[in-house]
Length: 137
Image (cartoon, rainbow, N blue to C red; front, side):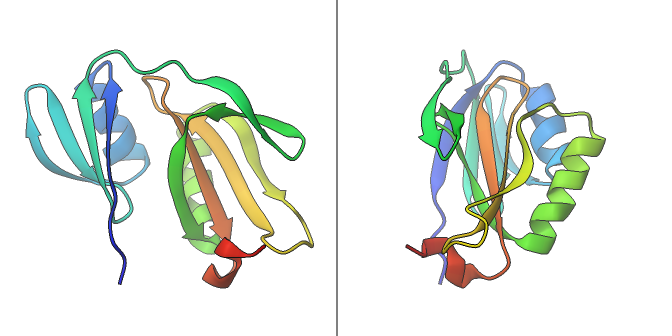
């Protein structure tokens, strides 16, 4: 059984966040108040609160890439990952790291993409052909 995580982040504009998380990413909106809104983030609880987001620099070295730290996201089955990549690209969201394969032919081969929400919070989405590869060493 999946145990959902809870993550709370600052965003600058709740309506803009609703358009991004609800409209582009397809996350269902949950409870809200004038200063925050919850989303079902792929089976996890994401709470977005009005405030100034944390500055994220590209300090995480993964293979040949520097990625923004900290960041968060989810692991999806490859067909779902591809559909999300298409939806995000069609919405005109700028990729920090274009959709690509990483560790090709190695244990843990994965597809990945990085982009930021409208407030600058970095997200990584990974795609795997099977869930067995998620924790491969």
